[in-house]
Length: 393
Image: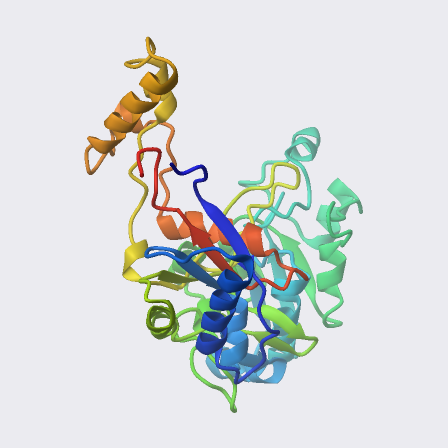
């Protein structure tokens, strides 16, 4: 009888650098972990690899000079509007530096408020209410914003005042505040839409007003002066590597997961599923950040990870049809309900309260929390038992 369900293990690996054979190293690390810690590997186990080491081993980097050259080539001369960037040293500071280099004439950074797209807050909703400000209609220049809200805009977790930080990147950098994408057109018609998940709407609105617009997914889509690139996401999903260089989101990801799946099969005899994961997708109840600064949770995964959970809500049965049972009789009746469940429970009351998300989004969040983002040294996560349930023998 099984006594555990889903387990997630962070797998310790070497420290990866450009040019390393990541497929071979991940395969070896998973097999060595199983041998050293005496656990078995199975069909449908999931091996997940963080996007950071995929991009690093690919050498998928771009410098500020290369990014600036691409922007300058695509937007031409003149002041550039930077609309809806997130508040992040890791995710945006180097990109902002490159954008200021692309426009010696000046940049205008338009921040959304009270928070950025992923929940980093400049202000609280209570502050807006106290000041009688409507964030859906009211826009501010820097002086107007400070006059209303003062100087207390320090991020509660990082201790950074991102307004002042972003103003330091060039002497002629302006910061303005509006949730209307078109507000930037009061300053310039050359715009970079820097939002992540709402970028298509922002670009559509600006182009309808006659603006010349790039999204971050339109920058570095091809190599520039020997750089890396990402044809699908551009500089979306990039991370700070040095003060003058970013690691781009990995490319050619479908080929990587298939190659790793085959390598694991040859090494273990087990048909495992493989995915690449970036940021998870979950909201912090204290800071309000919902984490997903990558364009997707998983840029590639093998076929067995397509789909969504199809689960019964066990407590629904325990409180209703099976409420007169207890102990082993209840457990056996529950197993029978699970075994005969429909192949698609969407819309049925028996599945109410289960999680309606894609497997890869759920798994990516589990992996991100397991591996961490600092010094754990586990950029690979092995998940076992994910596709089992209470009725699985």
